[in-house]
Image 1: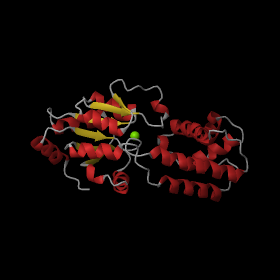
Image 2 (image 1 turned 90 degrees about the vertical axis):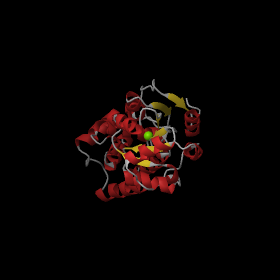
Image 3 (image 1 turned 30 degrees about the vertical axis):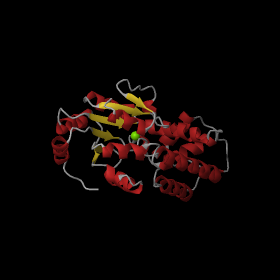
Image 4 (image 1 turned 60 degrees about the horizontal axis):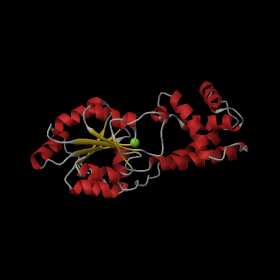
Length: 264
Ligand SMILES: [Mg+2]
């Protein structure tokens, strides 16, 4: 995937056609990052249960892990990127009878106070990190939607906070790199979207498609972009209760693409 300068991408758009610019979120909008996390979290839970020999986990095992996961993420400065050994430790406390909040607090106070050997924790952590490197599958309608937008000469700009190299590798692995004109790795703030609008010019419609209201939709809408929200399966704690009042709702990426091509 070539990376022309943002200005040259903008000039090409203005000169050749009035087709829209479509900014895209990547994780849980184009591909099922949530599914990769779910599989990794379920295996991590199974490995912790196997290691401590106690299985008190509730029937919905994914919800059981995620309750702890959200407790930790909401307390850690790295959010959902907190170290996996904290999740292992907190699950030990939880399986041994503590409620999610106490399990997270105990972990926070002393991450090493768990009845597992250091090597066992490292082994479970290593497996978890390997599982997270699996390539997430494309979500429903993404390939068709991208193809349609591309053939309608829309300029497709992927906006991510998930690291350029990782995202470019996933575009290649899912064979959709040919549709993406640019990848921008930057915090999704209003200023970024204002800059994009200025670059592409006032006569070009700029859209943003994403799954998170607070990260994808609100800052883009504040900058004057047209926004399309696709609700993902995973709602992080900061998204609960957030409503995309400014956004059109689409069920799938294909629906979102069709709405753009219809000029909505
Ligand atoms: Mg996302």
